[in-house]
Length: 405
Image 1: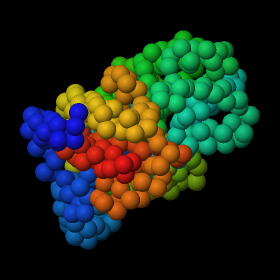
Image 2: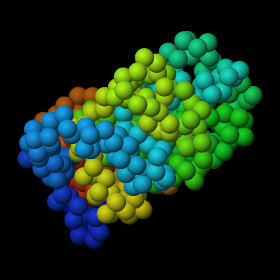
Image 3: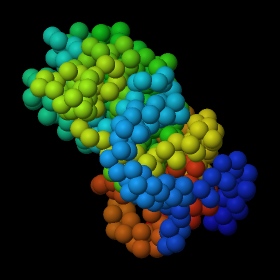
């Protein structure tokens, strides 16, 4: 389509968008005309600005230390339950808010390995997010484990067939991302989970790029463990704490390795020995970030109001529109489309590659066009369904085309 037709089509899609009204719930940056990086950092909600201000004066300032008895102590579990209800498809008592994604991954991986004694292999893919790979490399060296690597196609991700080929009697754990951070490939989590269980292994899914944008049903899929961040599609703010999921049947038999006071049966007794709390609380370690758990609560309310099915439908429309624009305006200029073509196998971002993108990205940012650069040559167009308009997508892709011209 021509650029004029693309603009007309974007206006039509925005007019018909049933979720378009939610854009008014978010703070808009005055110098940004196309924010295409919602899969790295979500926009703040207006209600979160009020909540954060009110917390300083009304809770921290007014209630002081009494806040722990009144609500803060339970917040990692109450917000965890809310994430589980709205975005993970899980019953209460299985999700906690704790540390960074990195630390939670470490906790859950070590817990899983301890629960599979005598098994010596971990399955992971070569294109998983660096943190996942680095943690697994460190744990493998620490515990004498062997990593069994799966190598996905660059524009796709890990398939059930690839996982089945490396599973065996020595497999203790499979660690994969539900949505690949680079290509946006949406893995077949139910099928892969079932294959791992048939082999006697446990499964840990990294949900950083899917939670809040793609329907997730951890309980129904039989998933053992999951972790994810809250600052992408959950809009918790820079560095907001991550969440962990531990299936109910595993909680009292898994030993978490970072034994802190907040995970004990009676934290304020300050006893001489570590005694883990029953249930999901045992996976907490130190004092949780109360401030870090504030903003995500407002986004979770919006996700609940919109409905994850409608959010997924909008996500697919956005990425389909972006794909059409890339094919029409960028592929003829030498750009490679590096994400799955099938929208059912795609999360809420697409990646495009061109040798000039490293330099072009800085110029785009200066113009208020904000995609996400991934080395060596990739631009990710991260389309957050409740905040991204079709007009932003059109403006962004048109600006990339202008850079190539």
